[in-house]
Amino acid sequence: MKERDRDGDKEKQPIIFDQTINQSTDQSIDQSTICDIEYVSFKYIWATKVLMRQLNDNESVILHVSPKFATVHGQVAFQWSLQMRGTTFLNDKVEMELAKGSQDEVECEPNYIALSLYFNDGPAPIIDNLQTITKLLQNKKCSIDGNDDNDDGDGANGYVVAETKRLSAIRGKETELTTIQRFDFSNYIKENVGQIVRLSIMLNFPVQVFEPSTYLNTLTPTPITSFLTANYRARASSKVFNRRSRKNKLLTNMDDNLRRRLSLKQQEDVEEIFNRIINEENEYYNKSHSESDFKSYEGLQKAGYKTILFKKLLMACCDGCQKKAKIMEEENFEMEQEDGLEGLDDENTFECNEQNKDALHEMLANMFFTRVALPEMGFVENFADFLIDAELNNLPVLKRVCEGYLCSELNSKKDLITSLLLELLFLAIVFNLRVLKSMTLSELSDRPDELNGPDALLALDEYKSLDRRMIKLSGSNLVEVIEEVQRFRKQKLRTKLIKQITKNISDDINQMKTDNNMNSAQL
Image (cartoon, rainbow, N blue to C red; front, side):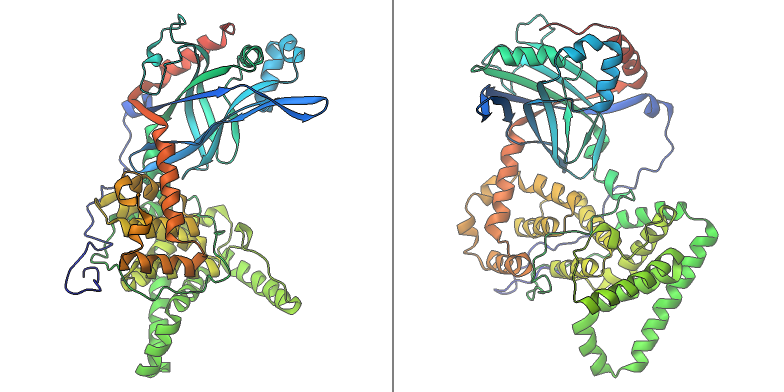
C-alpha cells in the first residue's frame, strides 16, 4: 500500500517498507573487543568576555553560559552547553579526594571559578567513559576548523588546562571539567576580567553511545510523562501515510533478547497464556456482538479495547501487576470520591516496578505490539492513537516498544519524505520519546533547504493537514517544530567531528596512574 494522495493516482513514499536492518549484535565478544574501545571525537570552541555580574551592593559573581552545541554522529545526537561561574565545590567525592592529597590548596580558596559541562538532552540518561580535553587558546584565529588540537603543549596555540580519562555525564546536571587544576583555571579567569577568553573543548565518546540499538535493546523504561495538553483525546482524522511492511527485525531481535532472560518454562507459560487470552477475547466479541454492532464498537473503541487487553495479559502473567492493579483500583475509587485528579508519573505506571519482572513486561509488550496492535496500524495517526492510549492507561512499556519500532524504521530507511519526519519528530516531542527525537532531529537537520520557508510549506495541502493535527493534539504547530529543527542545526554546526579512534583500555589505565602521580601543570 502506498501513501494516499489527495489529488489523484500519484503515489508517494510510504511510512514503512520491507526491513533490511542489521541483526542485533549478540555475538560472542572476542579479546580485542574487551581490550579496545572505539571513540568518536568532537571539538567545540567557546569565546566569551569575562564580566562580573552584580548580585547586590556588596557581592558580585562571574556567570557565563555558552550557546548550546550538539554532538551528532549517525542518527543519534546529544545537546550540551558550558558553564563558567563562581561556585562552591560541585563534585563532593572529588572534593574529598583532593582534600586528602592537597589539604592546603582546598582550604585556601573555598570559592573559585568552575568550568562545567552541562548535559541538556539526549537519548541516554547518563554517559559513562566520556573523555574530555580542555584548552585555553591564545591564538585569536583558532576555530573548530583549525589545528590547535595538534598543539604539543608548547603554548603555540593553547595550554591544556585539564584532561579527564573517565567522566560520567548525567542528563540535566553539570559536571566539572577542571577539577584537578581548578585553582589554576580560576586564577586565570579572575586575572582576565574584562578580557575575551577562548576555550577549546574536545569530547571523546565511546562510539556505541551513537548507535540507536544501544538504547532500543535495553530495559530502560520510556517516561510516562509527556507534554499532552487538555485536548489530548483528540484523534487525527485524515490518513496521509500508509504502510506496506509489517515485519520488523529489530522487534524480533528485542523479543529474542528478552526471551533469553526468561527460562524455557516461563517462555512456554507466557506463550500459552497469551494465546489463550487473545482467543478468549476474540470469541467473546464475536459471540456477544452482531457483526454491525461489533464494527461500530471496534471503530470507536479499538485502541482503548486493545490497551485494556494488554492489562489483562499483564495481570495474568505477572503476579506483581495483579497486586498493583488491585491497589490502583482502590486508590482510583478514592480519588473519584474526592473528585481529585493527579498527574501521571513513573510511580503510577500500571506495570509493577519489581526489577525481576522487567524482562517479562518487555516480552509481553513486544508480543502484544507485534501480533495484536501493529497489524492494524496503517497510518502515522494510528501510532499517535496508540501512544495516547498507552499514556492514558499508564503503560510506558507500550510507549517504549512503539518508539522502538518507529526508530528501527528510521534506522533502516533512507530518504523518507520530510513531512513524515516532521510528524515523527512532533510525536517524539509530545510523548517524550528521546531516542526518536534524537534520530529525527539528526535527519531533519541535514535538510535545511526544505525547511527554510515554513510559510511556503504551509501553502501545501499535505503540510496544512499536518499543522492541523499538531494543533489538535498538543496546541503546538508546524512552524514551532520547524524552528526546533533550525535551532538544532545551529547547535550541530557549532561542533566539528574530528576523528574516530580506537583506544586500548590497559593503556588508559596506565596513563591514569601516571597522571595521578603528576603535579598540576601551571598555566
